[in-house]
Image 1 (cartoon, helix red, strand yellow):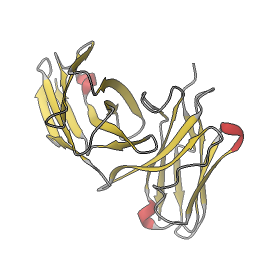
Image 2 (cartoon, helix red, strand yellow):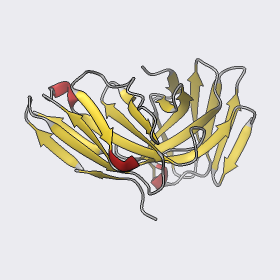
Image 3 (cartoon, chains in turn yellow, cyan):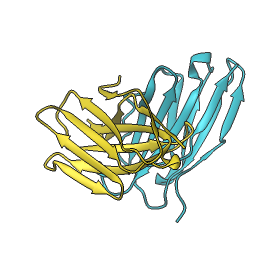
Image 4 (cartoon, rainbow over the protein chains, first blue to last red):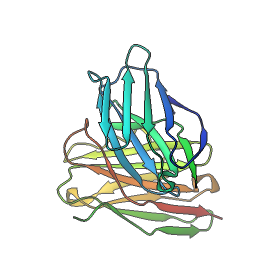
Length: 110
Length: 114
């Protein structure tokens, strides 16, 4: 069963604006990962943040992690039309399986 | 290099028929995972293979589902006596550096049971 919650479920912004997506989880983690999915098919790994890290950057992506609040956020700066996709946070549970959040559907309007 | 590949990309089958879905992981990756993504259920873990260890089958929803991995490479997910609720996208992923690192996903197989 899903053990992560993401909000918002859907987000629509204008091209060039920043997009922020949030993820909460219920149990302790070793790391939290963010993935992107285009057109309901394969997922692409974006960034991994370890439990002892508070912030991580990759290009236009910035991820924060607050283990005390059991939450993470993904910020996409200067959004582009190509960023339109669904974004999922995921954590490892037990035997290396990924447990995904419900995802945020991001739409970038030109 | 080549990524994870899956076949077929789409499969339409009649209720009650058996189906086989194939996954070719990235060469050298020792870990292989199957997930299912369906409307209303999100992404669900199904099964995990790691080297020669016994697979973790804890996510398989029923005994109609089975998977094998031959020679530590290619994997086949078999669904027997398919039901309409089996309709989903089945995603395969592989990982070569241990559980703490990212998984590489294939494009998925969209299964439709009519």
